[in-house]
Length: 168
Length: 388
Ligand SMILES: [Zn+2]
Image (cartoon, rainbow over all chains, first blue to last red; front, side):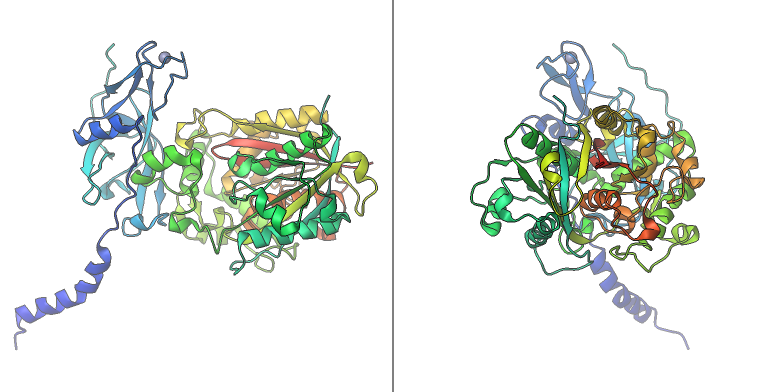
């Protein structure tokens, strides 16, 4: 006797529904930009990665600061950067430290050193979890957050990328 | 003028350490204060200075109205993250040695189990964490364990430090806690295999690499060394104290040297210089360790071993009670309790009074260094000496 395929699928759906219900991911904590940092997040919305660069001494800096700690100039500009970098260090997180990550563990949380010398933090996509190592090359991608409208610059492993050269 | 041996810790007190409490953080602090005053043989009428705990969002007004303090001459708020406690001791010494105050009460402690549990995402609220909240929380870098894990991972990468070596720190703390009836992990032995089999929290940290989520508080009473001679218990001299606010205090990820804690070395040089000591003169090190790796990093920063040599050093057993450099004879935050570093200072005082269980009394203990980590690798070091 053949089983009714529709019934089988119905059973499957019934089994999955409660699981699916718990799989709705909680939103990530949203950045709350200040007058100093707003340009970074606005650029991200345009899918552009920028950091501060001192107009006087040309040093890149991140996270945002009012003054250049090297020359104390208050003049700076948001400057596009390559979006390429290297994993400086990382951790594979198995326990969520915030409810938003309960359904995302395990995940790699990495400190990225951009080719311009500044560091950023990003979680890597799920497919990179088992592969991440210190020294691996990464590239930026932009992810719109459905709940709060923020666009997050995130990073993922990239294969054999060309070495980035900083042009003055 | 120097602060060395100007002041003494004359009273210590603490609540019972628990995993679960109905009492507020303030209730815990107040109980600890009363016990510390009783230990010193003093009363609230003697207290003219209070330094509430910034970590616990304490306010001086709460202590005035609850203890009935009639005329407080001195209070301040100290902001050095987890190193605020030793920085508060520094402030108390400055106030007393300059005549601003004569008897300063310092409470600290937390409800790390019943209140500010890390998994709720509510643990990080300090103003100095604004950068982390804006640029790292949305990208998943949220828990202190993740920040220190990345430092430990880099240490392993640069120096070959192993998970087993981290495990030796955990096993040492647990062995000592099993000689300490106050310790939360008393009666719960741990082997290196237990450590290796404990579940991964955030690599390379396993469960047993992480300090306890616990509830409890403690308090110190500090007066001048001279006055300390006439009180109930033998005074423990503050022979040196130093802090260091280092570079990049707003995120661990911005540290030039993520694999080390150099500010601890700077703070230690200040404290040891004041005390006229070398680190090898310390008979015991008490290191406030959120995570096992921090003990290894602190041993390197203090100059007990060279950079990268901390892992083999703990593996060879040198931090055991019978080793060259006993570390955390009470079991530390890993196995006694996480009380914002207060239990570490209290242990230093009790060791120097010969008050601890004989099995964990460090032989011939005359000098102890206590180390606090704060914010992101900022540090504070306190040098305690037995009064002659
Ligand atoms: Zn500049």
